Length: 187
Image: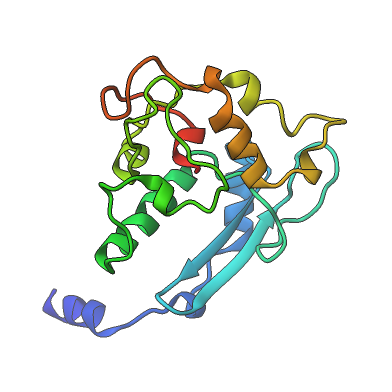
């Protein structure tokens, strides 16, 4: 028994030395009805492994997944990246969670809650979903539909249009209520 433990602790396996089986992964994807995925393993400075498996769509346009070119919607996972990046800036002293967020924004106008224009909105409010923003589904789902001008619109324009629309805001002042919102964490 001691010999096996010693052997187990003395062997270092690196990701590039023992890549996963393509057949095994693609079989598992089929079993759970997922058309494809991109797998990337990184450390603090390098990509250790990257590989695409399967396709973008199970039915039409059988384009293989390419980790360097394929685009995926991250959905709410992006909120985790935003929070992580914000906290790294806090650690470096480049972001204060409790000051008016307008000092960090590059918008040409000041953003404030239309019903509470003298209440500041902070990064802490944004990160904790308590900025006073609600869900304006008409505005959120306006883009990305066939025939619209989505590809001609930049993110700043989308966010500003959302923030300037009074229907996007709750009837509560910033910091008073928590309300989960997609756009509320994106600006």
